[in-house]
Length: 386
Image (cartoon, rainbow, N blue to C red):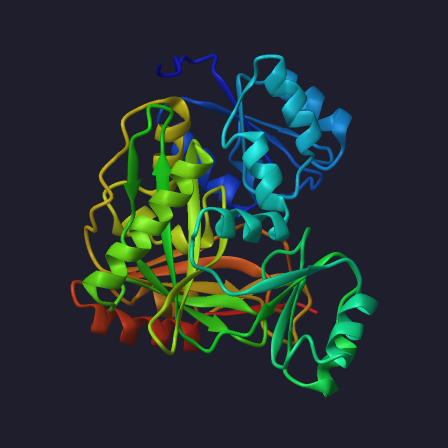
């Protein structure tokens, strides 16, 4: 059953970052009113939404009271109070993706156990409760080098992850409940954005390749379409479809993959929301990931995911040594490059490697798009006034 959309319909979005901003922009095309819950008075979505409510999305009472004001709830971040969402759902509030799924995905350990239970290929792992327990296993030879430590909760954008190459890196180990994974020898990192509505209709966007800034552990460049075999493309989409079906999830799901040196395709992580690996869809595909998420949660037919034109997406990250009020250098020169679409998120302060915007470069030739994107990366800089 589709959700009735009227001029009085209020969609609540928990957290008001750039994803919420772009979702609110898409919602405005259908006259959907957007209410944002975020503690930051100047969060990116605050200038776009119908109403901004300041408050912590980690606090039970704040989330619960926010939910009572809106007709449906979604979110642009995983680290929210799921207990409040579960209570609201029990009282009949529509929440997508479903809170039980969010609670599972908040815990990377539960994610890995989900993959294992459903025979979804992923890197081997073990769970630990403390740094001391990990050190004991290393000293007993039960954890070989190199390995990756991930905190089970609260990590994002490369935070909460440490690569431990040898004994000299053991000082980097973090305290807390963790996953220890074998360090996969990665040939490529890929991603699929997939959507499912409440009728069970499923559609995937084209597979994309991600190139990382390894110092910040953040995506620096994304290429669509991915230069990968049809077999890998089909396997990735099939695995993403299996995951979203097994979860019985409504909405957008981002699935990130590794290809190792033996061409094995392994799921790395999933995110139950619009995602950085889908920004290019705004200009590059017939339906953007933001419109698709709205279609899914409102019970409408899913839109076409066909590529209109190839693209390269670049994340605009704060420069390494810049911290303070933001300024952008090179905008004029980059806007003169044909097919360049610049998105500034509206964050007032920059700091090293903070996501401040993105640029999508479009061209009929993906090779030419890459050349243009390199020029943009060299020219457009995020600096501070300080």
